[in-house]
Structures are given as structure tokens and as C-alpha cells.
Length: 61
Length: 528
Image 1 (cartoon, chains in turn purple, yellow):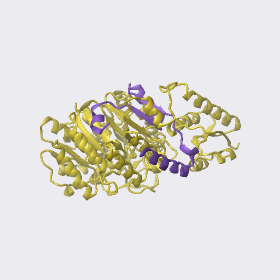
Image 2 (cartoon, chains in turn red, green; image 1 turned 60 degrees about the horizontal axis):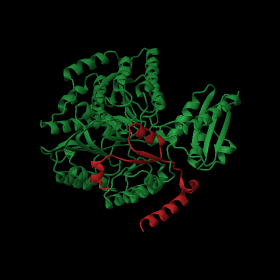
Image 3 (tube, rainbow over the protein chains, first blue to last red; image 1 turned 30 degrees about the vertical axis):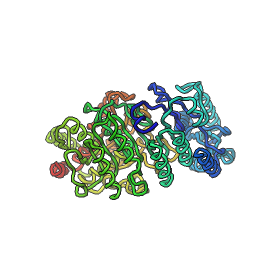
Image 4 (cartoon, one colour; image 1 turned 90 degrees about the horizontal axis):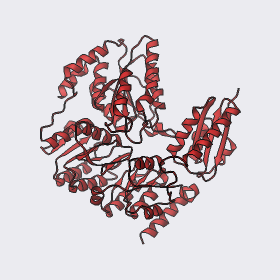
């Protein structure tokens, strides 16, 4: 949805990272899903970078 | 008796850093425990743990995706008990809490499939993974609030270009606060909805302005964070311009407020064009911009030197009266008398103001105002290697800066470092006034005033033991609806003898007045 659409409606949030943010939003009655995130590629940053490049290629096709 | 170190490594067990720091804090409270850590086994974290005296072969062979629990205690039994407590707390996390038992997808893609209408991703993963996650979210059509820091400028440019090409917001990186559709995101205050739209390169800047608007009976349509670097030459104001266009077109927004450090000149030109194109009355607060560098304003474009003035100027624009900045909400003569009474309690050699801040922009604002009113001010904002205790004369500390938050929770969440700094100031005979901020809102400590109180008391006792009185001046950045209870926070500080001012700017001015024994009044009067 465009920026103007977002500003005209309410946020529905996907939370990636600090779980506390999702808990707070939930407590306020905001629609939120918390992603059980962990570093990709078993924490190998270089490999994760390569995977990200592949994902970007994928998504843009 | 030599200390004992015990560690436990849980393979492939990821937890976010804030949750882990809270866990470690709990374990540290146990009797006999000297140090505790709960951290992912990255190389950087292992160094931090080693520096804290937590080193074992197990820790050494831990991988970045492994969770390390480590305890150093007076003896083996206490260390073991600490570990047991850590495991207990870890197990409890997944059975308690609002998100317990709820469906927890492992990827953004799955999450979006399971939340129809998902429109915003709030991303707070470690910096090295942030670009990939944010790009994924944008390609899925989500707006992004990127809380993560340590994201390089070229990554930020790519993300913002991607966002703009899809008419999406990319708020950040290092964006701590936003208010979208009345919903506080990440660290934010509970602010009434209203007609003032804010675009801010600063988290606590957005918080201070929105809180003062709320106190004045106004509200915020949207508060869009753009990240601290947006108005630099490298990023060219991309997201600021995008946000200004959006708020210009937003029917709920009637007045615009823009908060940032002074932009590069090329960017400034584009920003003023965008403001003119928005055709709505606007306030610009470029903190630190010299009055001489200001372009001429007009009736619909006001310039504010402080965050408070930015809020009050917006109120004036809303209500159709001219904006006249004043140094204090109260009569200046009244404040002069108060300051003189306080100064009277000081010894002659007590001349320094020491600011100990959790909010970065509040610290920056303090640095600017104190510098104008009281003379040279040392700060870690100017020199990142400034060591505590090395500062003579006035000093302002931003304890939320990178150099203080490695492996340590942000001071808005945990007051331990602030209490240490406060106590140190109590031992310094040249200190007259200790100045600080109390930031409320979601994400902040549940009782920031109570959390900092032992530090105030320790400083006061340290000074009194040596025949000195210390004066404490503060401001609360919060609203009546914030979860901490604004009135209760005020009460706690009142009872502790802290002089509370309605804004950061006023608190700094009062501190300067007291420490300079009224000499700053000349400069204050000259400015009005």
C-alpha cells in the first residue's frame, strides 16, 4: 500500500528482532506478528550476504 | 577465595539482545554473583565477555548462532546457582508474555501470509543483517521502520531508493521512534492524535516535540522518523522529502514540523522547496543552526531554536497567533529568584554543570544551550573518547551513544550507568548542578525516576559528606497517558528534591542560571 494509504489506515505490523516491541504492540491491541528470527546461514555473515543477494534477484523477477 | 566462572552454551538458540540483557540483569542480583552475561556467541560478544572476566573453553568454541550463558561468582556454588537461574528465566520466556503460544513464523514471507493486510515491518535485527531484512520487507510491499543501527550509508541509500520507487516509507536506520496512525512504534510516547505532522531525524527529538504538543492540548497526526543521516549529503534528504510530500497530501495533517541537525546546504534548498510545495504552515528546527545562517522565514514558515520552541511554534500556527519564544514558562523574575536561592546553597568553588542524558538529542540540545549561556562545555558528543572524570568545567554526557552501549542496555531501559555517573559527580568538588532527562513511553524503563533515584541519593550523600550541597535539575519527556504514570514519576523526583522543568531547554537554562550565579541572565534577556 502507498504511503498515503498507510497514513489513512492503521499499522498492521510484522516484528522482526526485539520481541519486546511485539509484546508492547499486542498490549495496545495493535495487529502484530512476531517473526521467530535468527541470523541466516547459521550466523556466517559473508554467506548471509550472498544469500541476501540471491534473494534480491529472486524477488525482483 | 578465587572467583569461579561457569558457562553454558545452548546451540542454535537465538534470543534478542534486549531480552538477554534483562536476563543477565536478573542473574546479577543473586548473592555472590559478580558478573553475568547472556549473549549470542559472536566474536564481538566473546571479546565483551572476556573483558568482563567471563572466559571458558566452552565460550571460546561457541558459534554466532549459539546462546552463551556465563556467570562469575564468589564461589562455584554461587556460579552454578546463577546458571540455573539463567536457564529458568530462559525457559519462562517462551511460556509467558503476550506473544506466548501465538503463531511464530520463522520468516517475513510467512509472517506476511499469516497477517492479512500487514503493511509495516518493524526491524531491529543486528546491523549486519538489517539491509537484507529491510530489502525483503520493502519488496513484499511493506513499509519499514528500521530500528537497527550500524547500517552503512550505501545500504541506506539503496534501501531508501527501493522504498521511494514503490512509494513506501523506509524510516531509519537507527530510527528509535515513530507514530503512525496514532500508534507508538518502537520507543514512543502515548500521544493524542491531532493535526501536527512531524518529520524527524531524531528519536528523542520527536518524543520531546510530541510530548510538549500533548501538554499544550494539541496532537500528532503522524510522526515519521527518517534516521539521523537522512539530511546528510550522502543520503540527500531522500526520505525527508518523501515524508514531507506524504504529509503535505495527508488530510489529517494541518501543520508540519521538521526536526533535524542542520542539513547540508544542497539538501536544505530541496527541503525548503518541499515545504513550500506542501502549502501548509510549517516549523523547522535545525538544532544548532546559527541564527545568521537561517533563511528568512515567513508567516507560514517558522524557525525554532529548540525542540520546545518547535512544538510551541506549531501550537501558535494551529491557533493563529504569533509565536514569541520565551526562555521560561514562568515569569523570568520568578525563575531568577529561584535560581538565586539555589545558588546560595553552593560553595564558591562549585561552578560546573554536569549533564547526564539518556536521550541523544536532548543531550545535544543541552550542549548547545549550555554552551551559549555558560561557556565551554566538554562532551562525548564532541569527543567520543572523552573519559568520565576527565572532564573539567561543564560537561554533557550522552550515555546512549555507541561508546556506552556496547554490550550494555540503552540508558532509557536501564539506569545502571547513569547511577554510576551521578555518583561520580557527587565526588567532584567543582560540580554545582547535575542535569538529566527522564524519558517515559513504551520501550523505556517501567520506572525511570525510581531507577535513577539511588544515583541521585548517592551523589547527594557523597557531596554532603564533604560539606557540599548538590543541585539536581531535570525534565520529564512524557505524557499523561504514558505507561509509567507521569504524575507518579514527577512525585518521585519532587520528593527527591529534584527541580523539575517543563522541558529540556528550560531545565538547561535553569541549570546555567544557577551555576553562573545569575550571570547567564544577561545572555538570556539578550536573546528574548
